[in-house]
Amino acid sequence: MPRKRRLEYGGAMYHLMSRGNRRGRIFLEDVDRQDFIKTLAEACQKTGWQVHAYGLMPTDDVVAPASPVSTTASTCPSGDMMRCCSW
Image 1 (cartoon, rainbow, N blue to C red):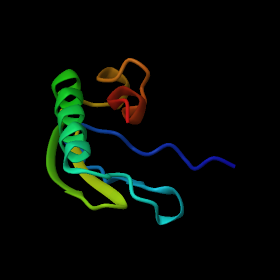
Image 2 (cartoon, helix red, strand yellow):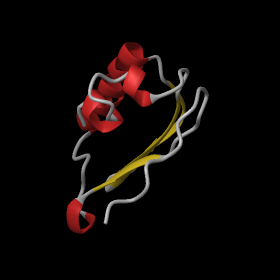
Image 3 (cartoon, rainbow, N blue to C red):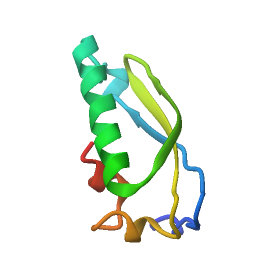
Image 4 (cartoon, rainbow, N blue to C red):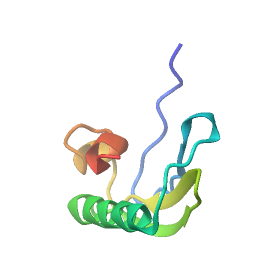
């Protein structure tokens, strides 16, 4: 059974996290981290989201963005932040 849809409102803070399979590394080199930050910046420019904090570890990443609008559906064509950000 899927989880309930989260409440969305302007200025809402979110906690996004990705982890490598079986504790595997997701960032192999510094260029991988730079590419991630570049992709995150591009996504924020497209959507108007603001990142308040992020952390990049070898096996996972954590991002804390805030939405400037009422729903992600209005900023992301698919309504899905992860697909919109392409990571």
